[in-house]
Length: 110
Image 1 (spheres, helix red, strand yellow):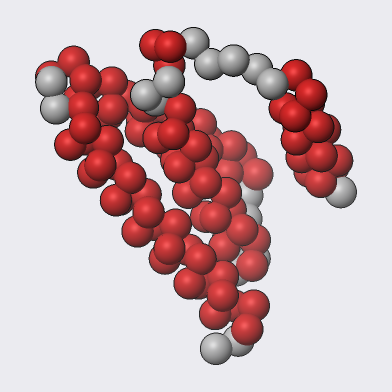
Image 2: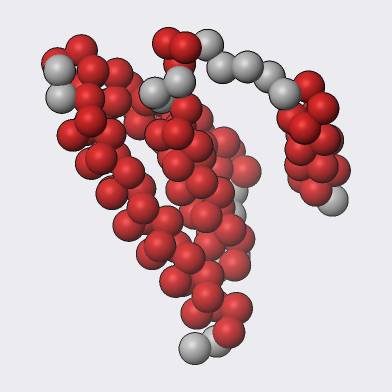
């Protein structure tokens, strides 16, 4: 219940406050969002499998975002930012779709 309330407050705050993203952070934000979605889908899957642990979820969420942003940052520094960004999106996309498939199988028992 607390999570739903916190989500609603976050959405309302985001809609009304409309925070701006600094220009230097703009290339990393989409990757961070995809990494966060990976952690969320993993958390939902763990919850449905009855193995969810809040500490593991928080650590996974933060670690996914930081590691993905770090990989993209290193790629920018090495001059191959777009290739590493694409690699991160592909890997996290595969994980998201795998978790989504497991969630679907669990929900529909198929």
